[in-house]
Image (cartoon, rainbow, N blue to C red; front, side):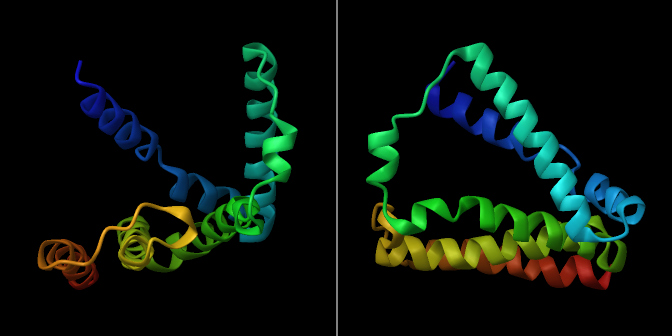
Length: 146
């Protein structure tokens, strides 16, 4: 299998589980989206700890200490994402919540790519990239009106 095709398949499948409705359900039982995110991250941390132990992986602490400050913010972003999803699904529905989240991610991705921010390779804006994101954002309007 083509390595790029395999990578695409892995990423699509990783994005496919129903995170949003399961975390929204958890938020109801846990009395808040923040509690739901905490539980979700605790379960995820446990699973990752088991996987790391099984795979005998050890972090390179010297490399970790050398990272720029913003490289440590992934968990913060993830926590905000899970809380927002758990809060948004009961109010907006799964499709609208995911569409808005993807739209927000795409808008920011254009900015990060254009400026090469946070260490990503620079990819200047062009009409095709803007149109692609515009079509997704148009999808937000279509999902909202349905």
